[in-house]
Amino acid sequence: MNRINRVALVGATHGNEFTGAYLIKKYEQYPHLIGRDSFETLTLFANPKAFEVGRRYIDKDLNRCFKIQDLENPTLSSYEDIRAKDINQILGPKGKSQVDVILDLHSTTANMGLTILLGNQHPFSLQFAAHLSLTYPEVKVCWAAPVQSTLLKSICEFGFVIEVGPVAQGVLNADLFQKTEKLVYTILDYLEAYNQGSISQTNSTLTLYEYVKDIDYPRNDLGEIQAMIHQKLQFRDYEPLNPGEPMFITFDGKEITYEGESTVYPIFINEAAYYEKGIAMCVTEKRQVSV
Image 1 (cartoon, rainbow, N blue to C red):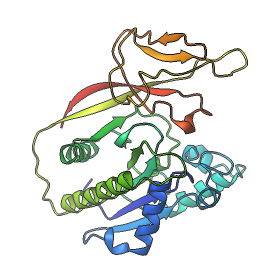
Image 2 (cartoon, rainbow, N blue to C red):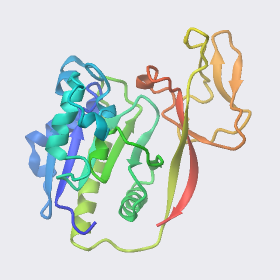
Image 3 (cartoon, rainbow, N blue to C red):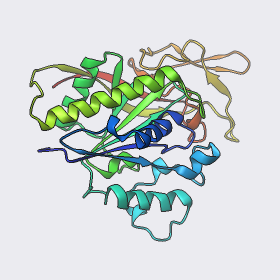
């Protein structure tokens, strides 16, 4: 990337994730907080109808509506499909975006702390992530192998998601709200320094959690959940899960262990919004990347 001209801050992609929603409301009221000299900062309140009723979405998950085929399909007429097309006009079009960076602000019921989800491993993305993790050691960085992305952040090449948790749905947590706000300002300051050419080019190592797969809850033939996240695994996002260690516990107390061949690092453990998606946790591998 040669220069950053426009940055979009997005909140309320999911209407019951209040951290990002109320940060966007704050920035719309006090735009000077996110103003920087070398680029324009836009705000977008992604799913206002879902926010009004305190739900994740109205008809379908907005953050799964940004496949190019779906954006170009005039027959898709749900509220979120129409809203995705509107957002694509505001920030996109996808692949030729009017913005250079998207920061999509989310919260999770899982114990994810402060997490940055990368869209790619472009040198700019890795340098950006390395700077944040050096500035805030509590920040974790995740990446999923490129697929046909359905996420809002995929509108532009340098789209990033900030996930913070644990925060209950439809609830504000002052500590995590303030930490997220501080992280947003740090990111904007980094982008300003990048434009000014004042980022020091020092070699560093980035700890990257690379997505491997999703794991569902044990279910019966009717699709009903037959076990819960084991209490020894609950809230242990980013901690090692070794072969033979408990993952689930059935309602009658039987342990179900992890049967993989190597140590993995689960994230989004017991995320409330993922029950409907058939996801009990996402499994990642931890590796070191030279930046």
